[in-house]
Image 1 (cartoon, helix red, strand yellow):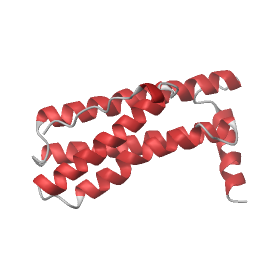
Image 2 (image 1 turned 90 degrees about the horizontal axis):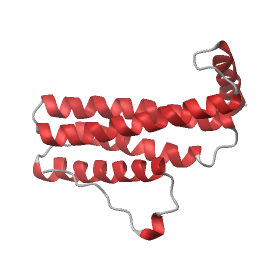
Image 3 (image 1 turned 90 degrees about the vertical axis):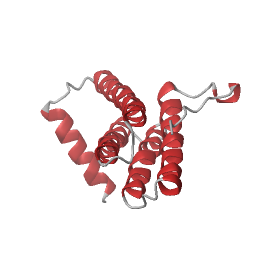
Image 4 (image 1 turned 180 degrees about the vertical axis):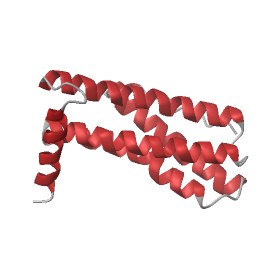
Amino acid sequence: MLIPHFQFNNSMAKHSPLKEKSLSFSIRIVNLYKHLTTDRSEFVISKQLLRAGTNPGAMVREANNAESAMDFIHKLGIAQKELSETQYWLELLFHTAYLNEKEFESMHNDSEEMMRMIRSSILTKNKNLGIKVGSLAVLVTLFFTLISYHS
């Protein structure tokens, strides 16, 4: 079963491309979960996929309401990690024959596209803040941002 892409109507046109992509991807993940549990009787890995695969969309939404630029970067960083985990579960489902090649490639390609969009957003925000990626300043800023969450 090929998991169809979600089509947005005109009332959704105000959304950013990343918001649209993350919602569409989450919908595809939910539909894939339904397919795996109903048609393939797979209940364990599919639950992990559902959790990890829908989280990036939630993190993108949270990032759009971030309290600060560093909070924005932090939320998108979590989305990246969850996408990476999602890719792992997709690969595992493919290599254990729960997904065929076409299903896997379609979902994996979407996750890669979303990963590129998130990376681009993080790089742009860092550039706007005057932070070089990989610099000590990024680490120090993230450290203090994380500490402030736990205070």
